[in-house]
Structures are given as C-alpha cells and as structure tokens.
Amino acid sequence: MTETLERIKAEVWGHLETAQCAYIATAETDQPRVRPVTLFDIDQKLWIATSARSGKARQIRRNPNVEFCIPLSDQCGNGYIRIAGVAMVVSDIETRTSIARQIPFLTDHWSGIDDPDFCLIRTTRVEVEYMRPGSSEAHTFMA
Image 1 (cartoon, rainbow, N blue to C red):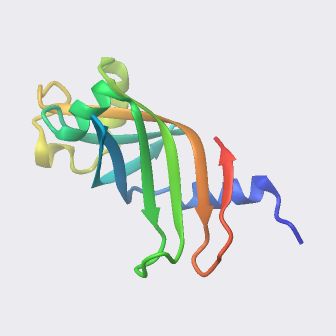
Image 2 (tube, rainbow, N blue to C red):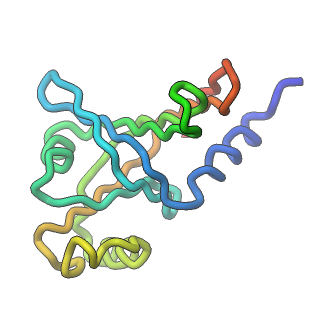
Image 3 (cartoon, helix red, strand yellow):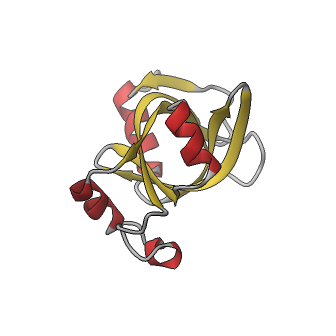
C-alpha cells in the first residue's frame, strides 16, 4: 500500500516539533561547508541563531542556498531528513523579538536581540527528502 504524501509530510514535520541538532551546508565560493546547528521549526519556517561574524552568516549573505540534514538515528545512513532551502538574515525587530523568545539558549550567547553579534536566519523550505530509519526508500517532496 502506498502512503499518502500528506501522511509522509506530517511525519516529517512531527520530527521538527522540537529543536533539532542538524547539519547545515553552506557554500564558500566553490567549497561546501558543513557544521552542526540547532534548528527550530517555527511558523512553518526553519530558524537558526548564530554569531553575525560566523562563517555560516557570512556565507549565507553571499549565497542564500542552504541544505540541512537531520540524522534520525545514531547509526550512519539509518534515516534522515534533508531540507534544501533559501536562507536570509532577518533584521525585522518584530520577527527577531517573536522568534528569539523561543530560542532557549539566546541569553547564553548574546545579551539580547539588540546584541550586534546576534544573527537570526530564516530558511524557507523548498525541497524535502525523508528516509525513515531502517528504510531503503526516500520520499522527496516540495514544501
């Protein structure tokens, strides 16, 4: 029996209901760069907070195409969610205030949303690939 796309999407978004440790890929000229981030799904968008001086913030300003990978088990290759999207640094104070309230580690790294080193990045989902742990079939859909 073939699963419905809506059921697969619901399963993916269910994984994102809480903050996730994810890996973000950005580009620095022709070299890909991958590093871990804490990824939040808020208001149907993906959010990360980082230093304004970080490589990822600098790279996103130059090339907004990013991809996240969230492993779904401790075993390599045993389930994942990949999300490709377009990222942008958010400077709107209302948005920064609203989203910052939902970032539990904000005050561990920054003095607040007005801290010049606080960088909020929003990614609009474009394409999602999902493989359940233990499966050998990936499902791809546009978000």
